[in-house]
Length: 99
Image (cartoon, rainbow, N blue to C red):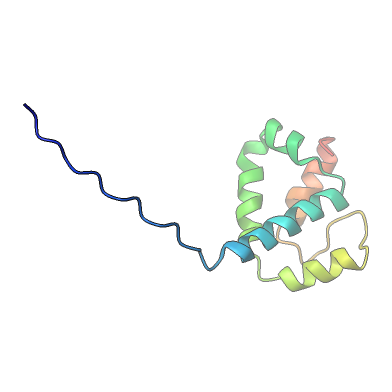
């Protein structure tokens, strides 16, 4: 008969220290898309040559999160601010009509 390999217990899930920060950055990106009236679903579906995924990564790496949060809280304009790492992408989405 075959030998049975004993099952190892599953490791306990660990809390990733940056998970809260990632959630905050993702929230800022979503709020920015809402503010400039860019539909995230349409943007992702239409592809924009991988632009949506790249925009998400740019937002995660953005050093301007505090400025972004302040701009969103102040009721900023309908166009993305100049300091936004995704300003060109968001303006392209708006111009394309996927907004």
